[in-house]
Length: 253
Image 1 (tube, helix red, strand yellow):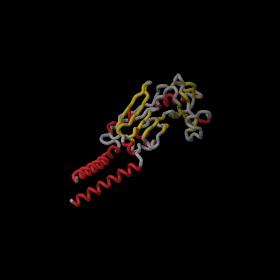
Image 2 (cartoon, rainbow, N blue to C red):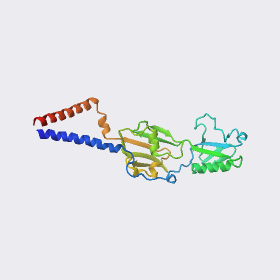
Image 3 (cartoon, rainbow, N blue to C red):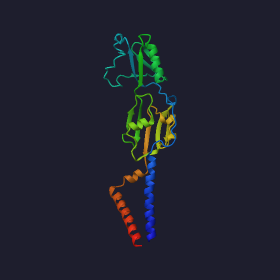
Image 4 (cartoon, rainbow, N blue to C red):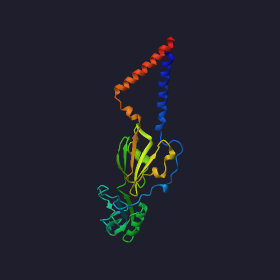
């Protein structure tokens, strides 16, 4: 009888040690992390249906009050970014005052900026153009602290950055099987990666694409955590009783 109780106590001890070792699954990017150059990142391109924020700055902005902003003064336009955006039409063109329609489809943000500056240079002195894609957004679902859809105003968005915006994974989130759902060429692609391993971060998963969906699935033990508090208290009492009984029996042996 004594041996059976001691065996039970040993099993309980092992389970405690196992739960401690599982903490390793909460640590991000263990091991070697690949060095990703900016040139390896996803190149954000412009396509029909996109909404672009286009600002033109120039020294002689007074000559174009409806279009340009003085180079030494910030814009005082209080409209939302979407209200100020230009829609890329079905032909891949954006229609702007002064220069008319310009083809931007397929271009990167830098290429579009250079094309616009070249065109505006025909009408004004030393124009400086900034271009941003306003409909770049990603969605984070599942076991994160703040699930939702997040707009991205930078040209590049990384997976760690977006997970940070979502408040990080909860303790119940499975860090070993993060799913990224992506639309490419009218096809849906799935990527699964292990956040606990640094080498799993590649250019395909580290840099996010517009409309990516990141899904964090719950750990299997999440179901156990949802058991009523009375069951949890009961198991704790049983465990304490077994330990106490084991101690008494070993002392009286």
